[in-house]
Image 1 (cartoon, one colour):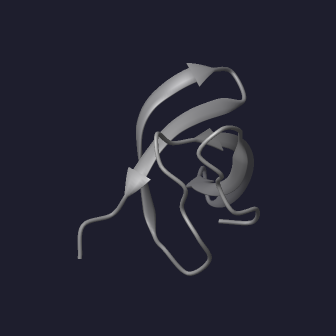
Image 2 (cartoon, helix red, strand yellow):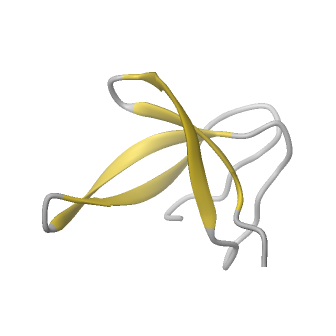
Length: 56
């Protein structure tokens, strides 16, 4: 995660793909702070994704 995700707006995540990584705007129903790993659960548009905290 490069920008924390607030409950009312986007944050930003880096998604590993094609041997590199790309940044996407990330949305979640709850806020997600620094150091929390996330999983992408849906693609909202070409450059935004829906994420959830990765279960530990």
